[in-house]
Length: 122
Image (cartoon, rainbow, N blue to C red):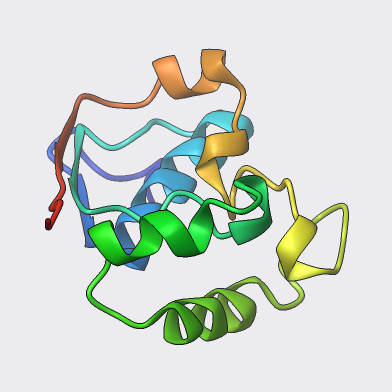
């Protein structure tokens, strides 16, 4: 209903919800629908593909996530199942609506103003 809503709509999400807020905004652009006024993203999950960082996922994971590596991989597998437009395998999907790191940089520049908060633990 974004095309009927006022400009006072804000999208917000934490983790996968943050990724969904970005995906909704990207899809709205794609469909020519008026975007939300702003995004509020709390540690948004923008890369569902651990294979995009070969050999680095497990190494880096312990610093930025409070869930176990296996738990994150299971969540990602379920989140991506059947959602990819191009490939049906979750580990190799490049769909920018699933992994926003694969979005066109021009599309990302057109996202609404965003407040992004993330946690890094040592």
